Amino acid sequence: MKLGLNLSFAVKRWLGGESLARVVKQDLGMDIVQFSWDLVDPWWPAAARNAAARDYADAFRAAGITVESTFGGLASYCYNHFLAPDANLRALGKAHLKRAIDMTAEMGVRATGMPLGSYSAQDALDPARREAIYQQALLALVELSRYAKTRGLSTLLIEPVPLATEFPASAQDARRLMTDLDGATDIPVRLLVDWGHALFAPLFGEQANMEHWIEQCGEYIDAWHIQQTDGQRDRHWNFTRQGIVTPERLSAFWRDQRLTEQTYLIEILYPFEQSDESVLRDMQAGIALLKQAV
Ligand SMILES: [Fe+2]
Ligand SMILES: [Fe+2]
Image 1 (cartoon, rainbow, N blue to C red):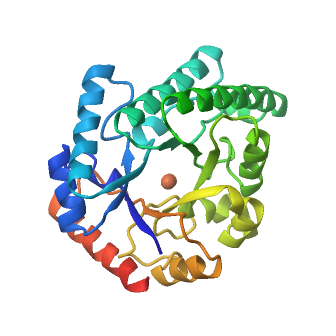
Image 2 (image 1 turned 30 degrees about the vertical axis):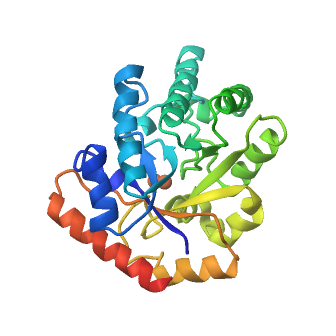
């Protein structure tokens, strides 16, 4: 298994390139990461934002850590972005990803992405509105792929989410997005599939299984978020907890599907009130369990 580390676990705790590179490399023994926009906000004024982002990128490079991609975190996820109910908000969603592309380029990183967005409660129930807004989102992604190429990026990533009021949610949704964009974008737009989202049984029922996702859209999956879950909520638990995503299951899937490059990015979220020491110990223990299963 090719393991990487989404840096959400570090948010508000280990700040600045030197400090976080030390935690990643020395304390956790990892050398592939996905940088979270919760560490540096794409909306910050460009000069100060770029300086903060480059501080991380430079320190990671010096420590021999590869930043595979940057990705939206919890802060970004609060907004409706490309599927918002009015044009002004949708334009801001597009500007958000454009600024993230800029930040990613400044870091010398080749890929960035986020969930596409969420419909309002009212729009979610209206198939015609959903479709009209979706068509605009496709155009926005095509334009952003053009811009991302000029900034030196090679891939944009979209993460499906386990909510019927958002898009893409199901594997079929994800496949539709991919086929609608196929050939229209200047750089590939691909999927980042989160195991805890894909296995959400209350929404997906019997289709909450990873083989179904591979059947529907396997050729478009560029990377994974892995997390422990009970399949009843989007838990983002660590593998130190019991659940349905065991390290053995991840390892068997990697082998059975003959995966080689689609990094398993460990995406663990901790309560803000949990102590730094206990987060670090728990991360070490979870990574040890995953490495044993490789
Ligand atoms: Fe995720
Ligand atoms: Fe999630």
